[in-house]
Length: 593
Image (tube, rainbow, N blue to C red):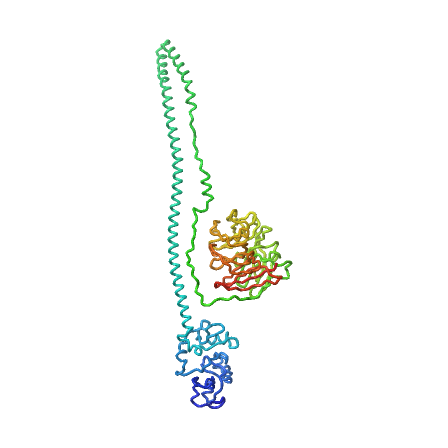
């Protein structure tokens, strides 16, 4: 048995680990071992690939030639000595050739059990010290991995995942082909419908054209009748006129006297029939369009409706591990400037670390730093703010319903500043911005307006039979979503104002936010839940429940957190939690009433 500090036999200088006794399994300093002294290893140099005793470890870190080497302390150094070609790990360590993504010059050789990460020696030294993490040298733990249960489970999961997504691609191709065929059929139906409309209009046109032609024929017939009657009357006159001239020329007084008297008698007879000709009914005609048809065409916004039917197959996503919820901390949004309890009615994320909220009771807009979990700035307004939206990277717009105004706010050096205002025609509540256009909702009467940044009205959407109290709005490229707590609906419209979807599974729908994939998160403060509604508003599901009066909500796509305001119990400070479900993270921010 070798004694530390004493010269060992030559057979131990190779630092083998194949001996049977506990002492032989002890890791020793290799430089000292080669000099004939056996001392316990205190660390390991990844560059020299040698274990070092306490003295060599200290010297190694001071020498000019080795002070830049990466050394591992006893808690994370390899538990087996580096072997010559006959080592049991040789065949396994030779394949450690994968470079580290953070340190490309280093090879991955270690595994952190706490963080489930593959590491190089630099990663271990800088980020996963042995006092914090349990790190293993890969050749020390990989001996039984070949054909292991872990290998079989993971390979099976990988194959199952691959098959799942291959099938998904196949299903999507089939559904897309079916969808395209249905669109082709829809185009044929549109043409058929248009043809039916044309045929009906053609029939109406033929009818009125026929009336025109009949009237024209009657007019022409009357002309012929008048011409014939006049010709019959004037023909004797012409003969008498010629005879009177002839008798006058020939100086035949007796005959001329008689002819004149006959002509006079003939004119008396004509005077009796002349009134019949003068009262002949001839009319001028003008076309008056059927305004009902024209008005209907003007008011109709579409030739028809393109209805949709979901073709998605119901399939469960592949899950290897279940996800758990976790609590993250608390944020206090009450400040020394506040005179009343906080009432958060609107919120928007400027960046993942910067949340902007409207405090209705305190006439304030507040900037919340989600990293430090504190209010970093507060701007007092002229009246109570309701909803808020971003209009540029450093500019916001806030609705002030009681004074019928939109207040623009800028952000500079993490400070909120009031800019210009825009007066609107009504009590404005919900507001959302997309590509330079503001969409604003109003009460009494219920309506939506699309405005430019100067407040010019581009479109007005009458809310009659659609809305009662459209309190919140959110929009994207293709859709405008409106939350109406009295109608108990979330309504989807296109930018022309046509209703293209509606979800009625709410009790009191309040604030909304769009996620990355187009789904809508909505607060229901009567059922005390937050629902996730599909993009087409056909389906919805509860993602957070048992809340206290949730009111407004905001989704962060980068951090996968869902912030929302709700009433606190016992006037506790506002707080937020994280809840993981369906591979999404939801976070809440409570407000104080």
